[in-house]
Image (cartoon, rainbow, N blue to C red; front, side, top):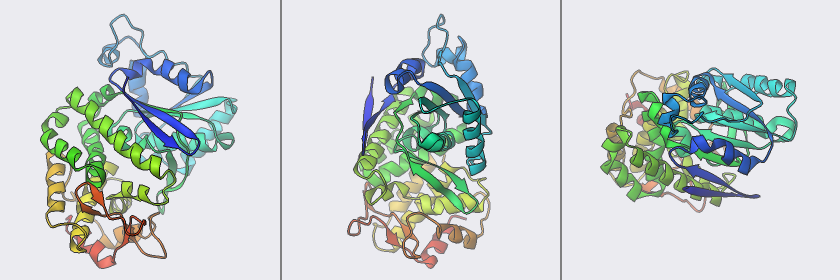
Length: 377
């Protein structure tokens, strides 16, 4: 079974990446969490799929089960859910989920299982990080975005009206179980949006993987299982290497936020009508144009990224106008900022980022930011 280890301050956890691994979830969780009382946290959309996966249906067989199998058979004492979408990733939802665990009598010998996309992982992980001062949890990502990025690294949290992920914690999972077969049932737009994080990983750390994406874009868009499994595995390797070297974002880990400063501004200004992955694609294009204009990156890098985004069905232009001033205002609250300066993680070439004496980010003027956002129209 392919496993990528992720190291952190007190040990390590494994990321299991294999088609059909969801059917082995009870055994994998027992190995990582022992005989703890489990609370499954998901959203309303994934909950409907889960009901199919836990029965001997065609959906279960698509996950690798034989017709005679009875499905996942996960032993969970409670199942909590919330409406799907970024708008649910709030302190209010965190309070409700925490109160439901308390009412159900879950103690420190319990554990949380986060089943779903990035919002579920961030929110359920934050519940686990804060419940009775912290209980273990497992990440079971079911979207491209969650598998290649959000489920790995131990960052959990919620949004506020002033910005994304401004309230949170570092709380590594006990295990991550990523079954690429779950990606076959994703809606097209959700599937494509997650691919932006794969593009980002190629930009920041692996030019050869970026080239692989260019060469295999058609297979990826067709959801070829072998291509998907390789895509997830390589992305997890890249992110694991970065977060193992800088668990708490003291330096190098900032490169994982490439494209995200402008992306978060676009998300917030649009009222989250722009999905995170689509915003990241636009943010990568815009921030790479800034890198070119600052003389950090060679001319043509942003156009190459734009070309790959187009091949993967990601947006390369805004579908509706945004108020640039409001996007810029949102960037002023980015966690990478220092001393009132908006700072970006910028590439110097494909697969390599600007280090800047160990800071990994550079200050950027409002003029550069505004021009880059305007050009997305």
